[in-house]
Image 1 (cartoon, rainbow, N blue to C red):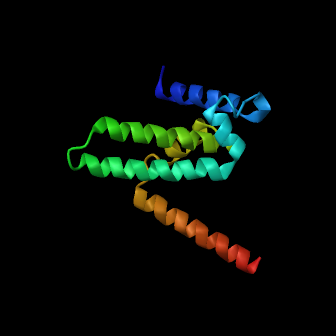
Image 2: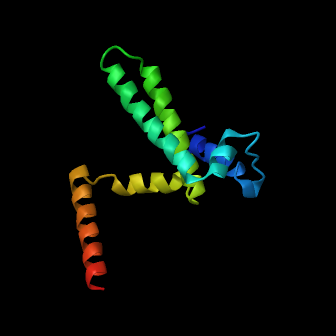
Length: 126
């Protein structure tokens, strides 16, 4: 199974936990987070992101690589729940990463800033 297949499989499991697909908040952690709404899973994403930072900092001082991998897995998992809630798939993120491939991070950031300014100007004058 490739990495993309693993993400797609996990996304399908998460999708199956939505209330519309019979997900039971009493029997499934994912169904419970989806049932509780964005505040619940977005809070978890924030917590997991903080735990990634802490595990990375610990790794600089003799911590475990496995701990960092585990925390990143938790962050990705909860991010997949957010994607599912908003009708998106891992393939959407992969497509965006592929679109950015070959573009320097500095160029990408400058392009996004220019697009944000242009949108703000349009809203201001439109």
